Amino acid sequence: MGNKSRILWLTLASAAILAACSQQEVNEVVKDEVIVSEEIESEIKIQDVTEQLSEIETVETQTESTTEETLQPVSIYYGSGTTMGLKTEEISISEVTPMTILGLLARHNIVSIDTKVQKFEEKTENGKKVLYLDLSKQFKDYVNMMGKDGEYIVIAGLTDTFLSAYGADEMVLTVNDVPLSTNNNKYEGALFFYPLTEQEQEDSTYTLKEEVIQDENVEIRFPQFQNMRNEKTMSLWNESIKEAAISNYKEAGILEYTLDYEIATQNAGMVSIVLRGNCNYAGAAYPYAFESTFNFDLSTGKNLRLKEYRDVDELADYLENGYGYHILRTDVADEDLHQYLAEDFTEDYVTLLDNYDYDISNSNLIPTGYSYIKDDQTLVLVLEVNHAMGDYLEVEIE
Image (tube, rainbow, N blue to C red; front, top):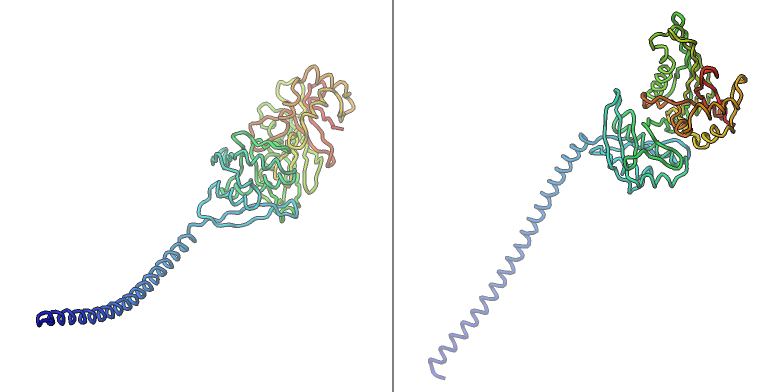
């Protein structure tokens, strides 16, 4: 090997050795830097997480503070499971909406989970706040799967919850814009608060006090409820009774007016009141006798109309064909009434009976007749007839 070649080989070898040494040192340095970098990165991550947690806690604190200020309490009414009473659950929600309320009611099986709100309106009518709630067909299907008691709880829970949530006086319930009609009932007109909590159900005590209005040739006597737990219902009932008792008296030309009453049924669940009167108008050929009634259901807070507790088709058949009833007077024979009904009365008995009794939610409705419950169980119809037959007749259904 020549000198030049030896020198070149030594130079390359030395470079290789130095390169190897340098690479080892570089690796050590890089390794150390990686370790330091990982430690720094770990510290940074811990710091970031700590800051994030702090920010979350701050946001949660602010949210809780805001939530406490904006949440609204609502009372959800549902079946007690053991009695016909209702229980209540107090829930706080961020916004009261019809769908939110339905969701809460679905938890307690008051509505089905697929029931939807089609329309919802709040209106003020005659000084009262009225809700108009239109639900989807699923609600009707759901109610029709139940018996009478189950349906009662569902309608009561739905009505009470919405009236309470919106501070309303009445609610009109429809399904696809048509009044709800089920296997057990027709829900036409307004629904009122059902005083059906367990406590109210157990405490159904009340008293009736006579009120008297006297003036020249005027004497009016009618009952008024006292000591009812639900003061709103009591006030509504008392106003309705008083208005019915004095309505004719307020007309012009009255020369003489008398009115008295009978409590036909009085128990913990129902009160049937009969108002009977006579009035004489100036220029009239003879005095006029009249009668009206109320059937107050203490468990629902409603004045029951005939179609809500009896089959009007069956009753129409009785009247049209002259059987299944007798007159509660001895001076008019059943045959005379049947002849009068057939010749001078009406051909549409179903429509006639369908419009019986006061609808205290609709003061514009003029009843075509009245009904009441006698001795807790017997149905009596009040039929308007001509003066020769006494102006009205009471017909007891057998």
